[in-house]
Length: 272
Length: 250
Image (cartoon, each protein chain N blue to C red):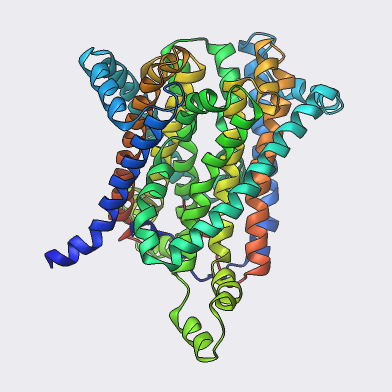
């Protein structure tokens, strides 16, 4: 109940976005350059030669992105995350809709969804390694476990918050239950679904990396681990940059989608 | 009133008992290496508690968690408010905080391992890195919600810098900061376990790791149960803190 109250999307308050961003570029550029400069100087002055520094990472980028081992690792991680997220999205949406629309279903399962969601997801790794072996299957299982509860909770909140008048109108026009589900409940819970997806995607990425560390399954996480162990920090850091890029990319994609297709909702920064 | 409460809570408890029963049945009908019934998990947990092993590990983990989390608060909150006050600085730093907030921090653990080794400091750094960005990100988000007029009015009434912080900045940003604190609790817990898994094995992380390496499935389940309950409890506390301060939001 508590979570429900906190994750209600707030109607958009208009901000003059254009005027803000034009004046923001210069300070942002200066800050970015300052961060890079400080990092470079600190590493050059006080750290051993193998430690990653901006110039080293920059030089490593063209080498790394054509390296077959790196591309293979990237493909492996991305396909695992995509597969895990696809499964998560289907199961999570179905479960979330059921929980949102059926109070009995909600009472039975909410305690588990909340409970599992509050668990630090990486503690299942030793168990999954026992169950699935040190394999890609254990990685997929970790990704799904990491992501599914965020989606389910958000979809359930969304389905519950559908204004009752909409459903009453649809019933007075004698539309079926399925019709009400596909044409009213699902579109109305879309912003919640997207907020859940943003969270889930971030967690899936963490799940994949942690699973690769733990299980020594080939992928971007393992690439980072392997290279940093053999003191190729610059190369390993390219992997980190890519992961950060994905994290930010998911965030921006969901924000953009919400703004573009659902302009009446503000991104819900509280739903987590 | 009482019957109402029973009707509201009964399905939850029935569901919990059904889950435990299901666990028990599943555990009894599969191999011991695969899954251990609830009753045996409790027995194993009791053994761990009696041997004293469990309590030392729990204290070890708690020390790491609290140190990292408090450090994140000490750094994150004042820094976030400072960014709230100095607008140019905030605009400059904002995107980088967002990037770090969205970056999976686990990816940095191998670097921390090879640069700082196995002591307490690298683990503290991991927990700190996991926890600090939610606090910072949400505090800055709160800072954006302060209307410039409020600060202008305060200044035109010649309020001192200290009064401005106390009367305007703090009440406006604190509810957001507390959302960050709730997120940080969850993340710090993940960071704690990750540090204990991938840096030197200590605490609850070591408990579960050694159980899994010895094929002690009962020990794995007992550790997961405890860490899971710990996570649920801490999340509850986080939510309560957040809701307490949420009333301040206009």
